[in-house]
Image (cartoon, rainbow, N blue to C red; front, side, top):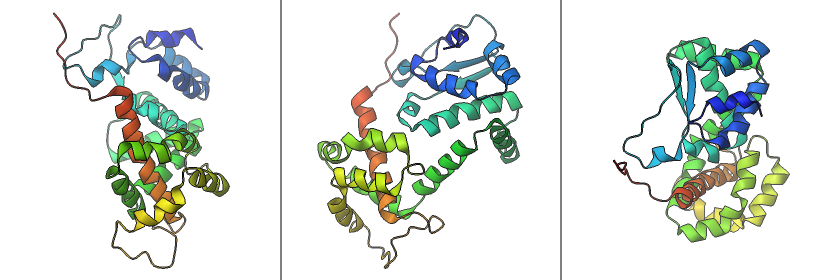
Length: 241
């Protein structure tokens, strides 16, 4: 690991491997600029989940501050890499928050070689907007948490690591079978009165089987349960004087 990453002293060290993966793929001059310019800082801190007020001290003046939510650590690797690369591209480009600026940032990411991550994130977003995804998510939210974790929790890491875009149909069918999901899918489908017809395809450009989108919705609910188990119910707590 590059020792210069330690200057992001308020960034949880669990983000370091992903920061390094992004930096290794950047052009040499861009990488050196990001590591040496102390006007950029990154914050990722568990304490932000339950503290009303926190103060951070920096050795040098900071012009750009990137905040990474700890929940991002529960996302797939392509989402983590994309999130970090996107924020660094935003810093390098100096662009604002407009749609035009976003297009320039995406062009920069493509030039850096992050096309695969961009496509995977687009795919995830398309899934999340589908009817079948919402069906799976809403069904899962109504289930007992222990039931949900028993059927799907053991396979969450495998699903989350692979991501639907990179998971073959064979891998998905194996996961689905191991989780006992086939029997559950029939029950899930009944939670919506919409007639999906004979086709098993969802509305995502006619390419995504409905059962995959339903599983994705269920796993989104599992992710929320796992995060709550990991961090509990965090309430704003004033710091001791």
